[in-house]
Image (tube, rainbow, N blue to C red; front, side):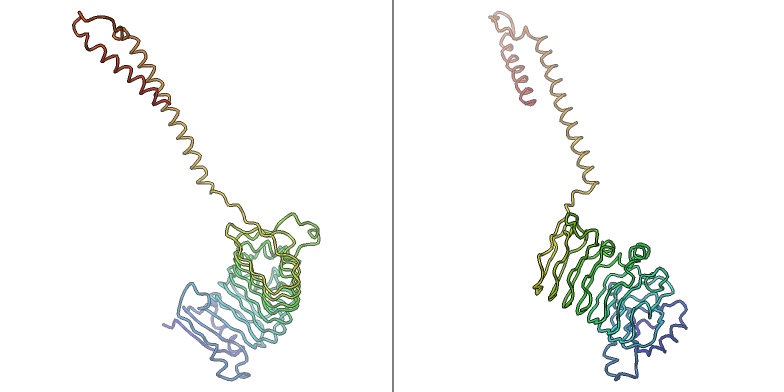
Length: 357
């Protein structure tokens, strides 16, 4: 049975092949498909991109489709696709205009490079057959997109669409480089969806002025903060127009944030980083509280027992007080035992009070 496949398609041939696979899954452990204008490039260029990897379930690139200079639209993607690359494409304006799913996808990584006409990635429309099917995206890499003006086309619909679709909910890594039209990277609505983001890298963007933009109502409010609980790395490199990272403070998780900022001459100040104070989990707090109560009860009972013991001992000594009358009783038989008994009971009293103290 065929498990691994690497092949180059012309765009029109790919569509014909996909129409024969109604389940939109190839049942392969590993595949790498490359699509584009096969006849427009040399054969050596095409096959250099066929990088068929050994099957590894943890590697998202084991099931990969790469679109190069493809002038066709309405491509249906397989549901088991985990890695999508688009590069050197001079025809597409938005990914949603050219790509679609028939069912929920397994897509975990998107990489887009050197696409001259691409203006946005996602439309975030509630009826989009591409945006609404992506729920497991972990890595988003954008590079050399000279016409990119926004990552998400309809900013007004971001809050509703992302809340329903969760396209960014699983995103862990975001890389952005050589895109010179965008001035503000993350809007307030987008930040709310980046709660699992771990790494942000922004390099070589000539027009970038602000990483985390604030809404108009928050322009004069510096007291609050934005929360990115899993953010561990923030890299900003060669951003000549960058003025501010975030007007608010950035609240991260319990791990220290690795902040790497270089070649940003216009930066007014470094961002204020707050580390969340992560206390003892609720279960352990409850356990320690119960343990303290039990120790208190144990000490209370212990002291009470010693107190009762001394009361009983004093009562016994009181009843036996004639034995402590050390008078001249040499003519009485057994008088030599009385001093010993007196010393014994005196020692018992001393040791009992020493135990209480």
